[in-house]
Length: 323
Image (cartoon, rainbow, N blue to C red; front, side, top):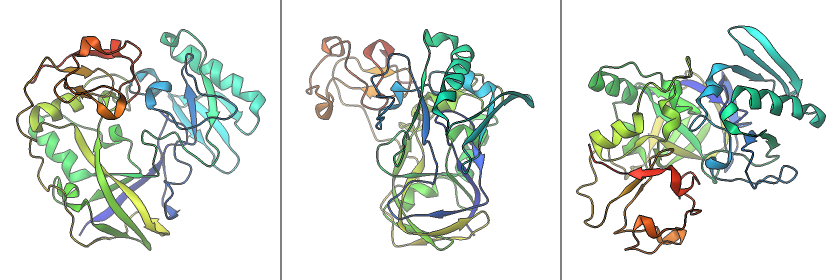
């Protein structure tokens, strides 16, 4: 029996998970109050007064700023009161509904993440969100898959590294890939399983210590030829979902149930990999949907070209070496 073992929201992008016992999901909408606030990087082009979704390279987040995990944040979603603690000691308490107090939050994270070389800006998405993907998806992690990687690699892997909204247990390892194209009945809600979730360097950060102590995307790519773990869902039928709900799979999925390698890479010039999100640029393929034609050597790409996955610049890339 597959069941919901955990529900989480992350009200401020890159900051603490907040557990939820039950939540009402709305068709076509993301998990309620998930990533509705964020801290933009000092050089970000995001308009503080009219912020819009942007790639994660524009924000302060764990992929680049592991120091965020040194503190615990709690946002009351009704009052918008934010509390920041470290080891149980309160460091800051402000109400995010008062824009005049946003400067206190910005100054706090300027001190916490000195490598920013400037003060971040706190932004509120209003009816939108600042999730990694622009569409309204909900992320799911199968705990059996995580445990299978722990056995394979001989290391403990805290599932909270993956910052999912829904954690499930009782399925077979990697079974979630086979659900793609099907629907999940979960409580009184129905969710379509849309696609796999490619992981970035945020998962390398231990959520307890704030240290980069694993290379999970690199290890996945070396073992399986991809960096995918978990799936994205889209709410088709609204309803309430609770921890402990049994999950039914409706319809036949078209995904892979195993983590098979996609095959040999295309021949061509040297590939380069983004150090933040682990996107691999293959000159033989290029990035046609992002302005780079097939056959373009990496060195010929303009230096301000943004990574298709995270928005980082070309100076974040290095030569890709298959393990």
